[in-house]
Image (cartoon, rainbow, N blue to C red; front, side, top):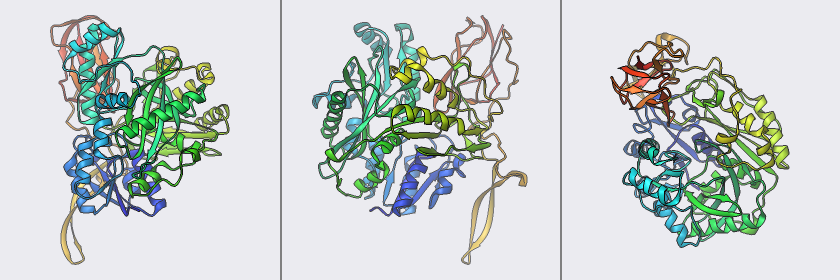
Length: 583
């Protein structure tokens, strides 16, 4: 068994991996950015090392910084979690070239499947058909238009080196192609460190069904069961469950066997997920995620397997001690993602800030995988996942009712969360009957009655300042950096720690027809779409704001002529800041 694992990630998944390591007697090493210096995953680790920087690019996507920690810590393995470097073959190869174990598939498998284009080709070679699409990266928007004209609109632009809906944009018409491609490339670069994208057909009413696979280095490849992840908004999963409802056993078996063929085709080892779109009795290969999935707990609850444990055991060289016929699934599990977003009136506005209270649910069949505790701060610079609430029941209806009860027991204050929207989803007749699709949340559900969250914090940071202190350690004089409460105040008093000094605007002046366009959330301006003297119509995009790794358009509130542009690309802004003025 491995001795010491460096977890090259943060938040909920880092905490999740640490807990299994602790149970197995494996030491853990955390890495952290400046904003995460007192984060939960740092507090729980046996050792923790600073990466420096605030943004993901400066910290968790800084290969040299992570390799430096690997050398200093003496860790014999690296677990990448999900996101960041989890599907980056160059990173995996940099780890293995140092004689350190990468807890995941071989770099060659990541290269084949981590690149969504080559994965389509590999699946086709294994006899598994994919959604119709181009098997080359996009050079420009004209290629999107040509594909749409050939296969019909809408079409989907997707990140070639990512997953989870990041960097995915649906294009409804030729006029939208250029802006959609630019946006997809920016999100892909921000989240995965690579901007390449491709295009494929967008199905009318599909379900998103994925198959968990597990393979060892001794030739065994198993499918453990499927997960239905069809409840999505902006291609981000909100609710996942296993088994999939209204899913024929013969399709389940065929999909599982197809997933095994795809995994074998790339020489896959460790835990992975093969994703499919299912519609009208047919399924199409979508992509393979060469990592642990966010929604892996629902598979764990119905199979009784700890997938992180088996990741570690397989990476240690152990053979799987069970065969396909030994895999059993019992009952039903449902997971809801608790994101720091305000779903009021269906807007799902990012809600970074400090959690002032977090009281988890309890009771039979309830599990909460959280990356934060009360007093912790959720930064605008990272993913907005606070926690995952997972329940198990003897059947789907019991699990659904148990989830509603667990949500009712959950208290999170200081930031808005998606829990009110989860109640709407779980209570709708389409979900109850299992007839929903990936487009259902955005086209059928009504969140207009959800009230705005109250008392949500919008500051980022832990209220500490750096103090350099000289001390003696074992008789040796050293200077160390301490992060202490500013002015001696309470430990977690929130302060603003924006990456750049934000421009000082007049805040809080939004009013219908005022002509002063403000931003609804804290974030970074990634594009300014207007200039002084330009005429705009009400509802037209004036700037694009990135918050919590998602792009959000800010629109003109009235028609008129732009009289002032108060921001530039790269500026950090706070809730209520004026970005554009219209006369």
